[in-house]
View 1: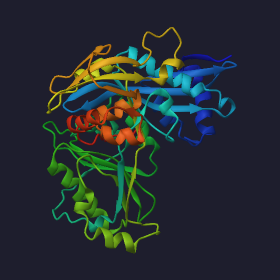
View 2: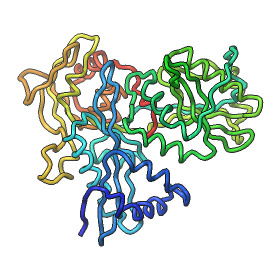
View 3: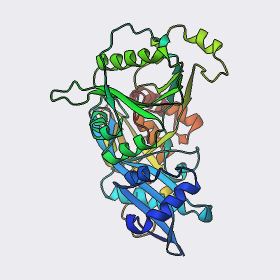
Length: 409
């Protein structure tokens, strides 16, 4: 009844536009942005009566894990038309996409979620909280003169993309290796504009932000920001402060490793004064991205920890296995393993005698491996079963920086 196949831009373009218009992911006039979005990467459709009715897409990139870059699949959309909902198509088609990307070399897969619960069925586990902070730019305590920035438009998407790729990245940072994805994101932002500085050796864009404004006084939302040094970040924040003569509110995602509240004058007073207004000063936290390991052996090998080693057996379940047909060599990560985590981490198949057992699923184990939450916390709210002594040691050994993608998808 349903046929799964690769997306064909010539024959499927109209049907996919219809899907995205039906679910209101785009409006009339946004078709060029969708075309740019679909230009690169892998796209699969589920066909009914010779028409595409479900589309899933992914882009390849990298995930920074501690000091290493791991090949990453970024699932960038899962969309289903009105007439084939609740048929299991999105889940099965996404499972096929993940398997194809894993067989093509992706060690990890990640995506943004519409709600918690659905993508756990494919083995994903929730990422850490992203903080979106809203403040009056005039309240920034940065006191430095600004240079006139370069005005950036959608036509500058290529130089902005290179600035994104070359930005300062911390643990968990995601880089998307398809320039057209950024072009699409810029096209979708209403009243968008960019400001930045071309301080590279050959005049490359080194630091910038891309924003959009609702009106004369904002709010202004900063959708993307890239910088290579602390001085460049502070210059961008000083540039944001310069907007404070007219703009009354800026919303931005807090960069990894920083606390923007440190740069705001009287943050609690302003929060009280602006409460429930259109210009409310507030810090909102939400975990809207999820990740799963696709190649367990390679991910464990990349786990180089500054700690004493810990050895244990791992019993791992993976729900994606039952969603894949026999054509796929990759069927997830379920199995029984023995692990050593430490400066030189190792994994092998089968249990070793006299070692404690950690029993979990791939999504929860990915959260543990990424450093989203400690083992003892995941034993309460996640799906981990292990002796208390092992949980205590894992809390000590897997003490990682907060993982932050620093690029929404």
